Image (cartoon, rainbow, N blue to C red; front, side, top):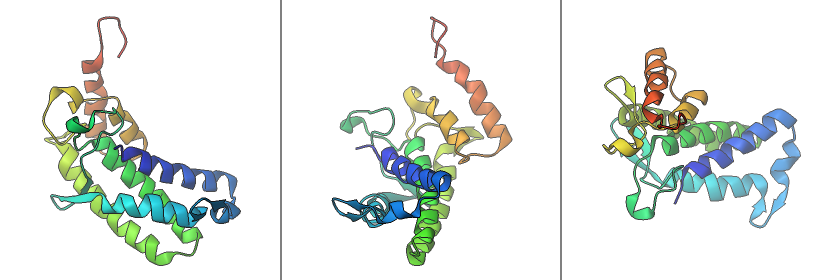
Length: 176
């Protein structure tokens, strides 16, 4: 199970609407009803039910995330929670466009809680970490750069440290 995809799907829907100004897309029929309702009921709402408390906020439950770990190796990945923040934030705008202000409000409240949980879980001792669980394998990974690019982490010191630690991913062949 990879919850990062759910956030990415919501993000791309919002990006499409922003770029092409195509509100009719939201009423396009899908197998499960109009696109907006389908995205709300079968992506956004299930994502909201797969959150758990962490510190002062929420994070996405353990999953296999971007690295497609096997289910027994699931972890709390920073990328999954970051994509939930990004996707749900974007979907709040979509809900606004659809006139679904109660969903917009609920989602924005959860996004704030997700940001608090993300900061508590994945930023430790001034460093951004790839997983909540300790371990070398995903402590630093390339997905952290996407998290920065999406604006989930904005502290210049943490960004600089993360970029500097990318050197840890270099391999003998010269690649990463």
